[in-house]
Amino acid sequence: MSTSASDVSVPLLDLKAQYVAIQEEIRPAVDAVLESQRFIMGPEVIGLEEEAAAYSNLPYGVGVSSGTDALLISLMAVDAGPGDEIITTPYTFFATAGVIHRVGAKPVFVDIEEETYNIDPRKIEAAVTDKTKAIIPVHLYGQCADMDPILEIARKHNLCVIEDAAQAIGSEYKGRRAGSMGQLGCFSFFPSKNLGGFGDGGMVVTGDEELCKKLKRLRMHGSEPKYYHSIVGGNFRLDALQAAVLRIKLKHLDDWTQARQRNAEHYRQLFAESGLTGDQVHLPVIRQNRHIFNQFVIRVSRRDELMAYLKERRVGCEIYYPVPMHLQECFAHLGYRKGDFPVSEQSAQSTLAIPVYPELTGEQKEYVVQQIAQFYRS
Ligand SMILES: *Cc1c(COP(=O)(O)O)cnc(C)c1O
Image (cartoon, rainbow, N blue to C red):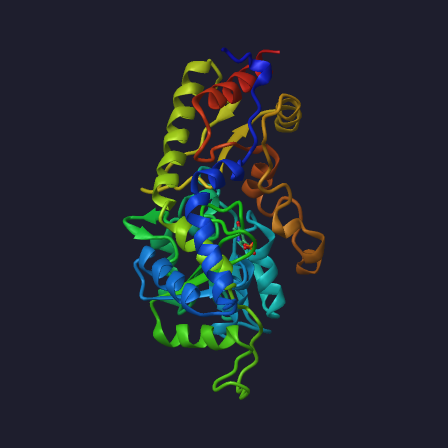
């Protein structure tokens, strides 16, 4: 039986396809937690912490309630607060900038590189002042930021580096894993991330034993011993149920990453054969040695029209992200203006993520590229 093109539909992400492939493994792991009735901390959380740390080539992991909370608790652990400036990229998910504001510090934005969409290290030093406390590079879409020059600037000015690796677990920079290069690395287990739970979750990894102890304390309202508080933390715990699910999924992560990388390669071949020009569709540039393709983001002309066209033809696509942080209404008080970060602003208007999830079939990829080619011919 042949399927006509009109039968094909391609969601941006298909978590059901992943679930059916692993449900035989997941169900018993969830059942075991239900049997134990041990939902807070316990062996599943400790097990995942050890495994996620080892996956990042680091000694310590601290499971937390979300990727956002991983970033927040990291800033709390380095005592970032009022009077401090934190340098980051305006082209990211809101959480990166939101947590800086929430600890009372001031976000200071630096524009991105056009090719990788990551913070441009050549522009960081001009933003450093005597108030600068930390740099938060974001490894956007699954490719590491250019870390060597960032780490060098941090060393020179005695700044902390907190990696926002929410989209980049397992990604590498010169053989080093995302999250392992700064003082602290933050992961998100939001369902749409490459390692996604059945709800919210996150992890901070570190090579610093003292910071690990502080994170663990902050995660439990700052108490040590129980009911004695010399610092104020919060409830930032990771659920045992999520940890049990994530431990099963972590075993499959490298296979899923390889499938995403194969999809990216296949797209490259299909786009090359499509006759589309570089002005119409510009493909992702791979600069670092292990891109894990949380997203496959193309830079296109007539982006909004293309997006509407694809959605009409059942091709899932999304804009990550339509409004850079410096132009968000809640940050108006920082005094940034349109035009301050032209590369971020231009990217927000011209990029589009297309499906790249591991279970994507050859037929689906062909359909996606066919539809894009058809749009530019019409
Ligand atoms: C997803 C994401 C976060 C936040 O993670 P949550 O688990 O959703 O709180 C932070 N930064 C980036 C870059 C992200 O993609």
